[in-house]
View 1 (tube, rainbow, N blue to C red):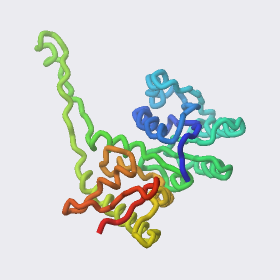
View 2 (tube, rainbow, N blue to C red):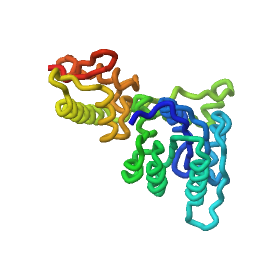
View 3 (cartoon, rainbow, N blue to C red):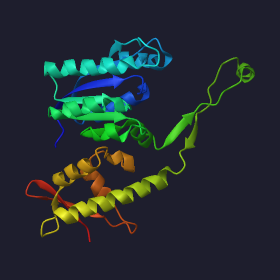
View 4 (cartoon, rainbow, N blue to C red):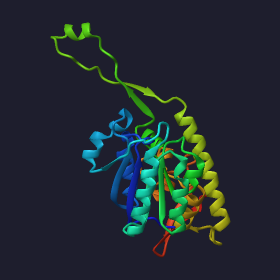
Length: 272
């Protein structure tokens, strides 16, 4: 199913999603259409939800305050589900993005899909497979953010009060130290090898007599099998699938796939 030019309602569970992911999430959603509703649900009297305050103003997000009536219960989930159903019946959107790492929203995603609405999930790596599979697309926001920053994290060295006083009484911050995420390259290479094998098998199964397969059909099949597919997760800076496939090379530097237009339609075959 093609997902583009959609009118999207973005509903964010502040109890499970950090503000640090919002820019990445919005960038990904721009590929699918225009985000109209931007709503954040949480108890903003709590420190965790309070971290969103700057993002609320910067990105014009509507804050939905929800206080837990019973200790230990997540009232934000109920408020978000009720609001989602209200938006559904207003019939002003054709796509929902549920930003949460909580499996409690699996039923809601399935309900939307039963009405032929597109459902995009967004969450961290820990998001249960039940919710992931209930969505047409899943955006692994923590993995994407990590991939876009080269698998690196910054750590700020703490400077003592005594040291600050010795430099003309002016506090100076040291350059952040870069700490590489060990194992990232090896894991990415292994993941890429598995992806290439899968893509080859799909092409072999569906190719015409000349060895070529409709590229759009291939991408649809990939998304059916891997609804979180994103070239960025494989170290490719361009999120375009065609650019990604053209960049894939074997250990000898030879292109693994060949893409060309037949008529006005992109086709792909295994380069032998």
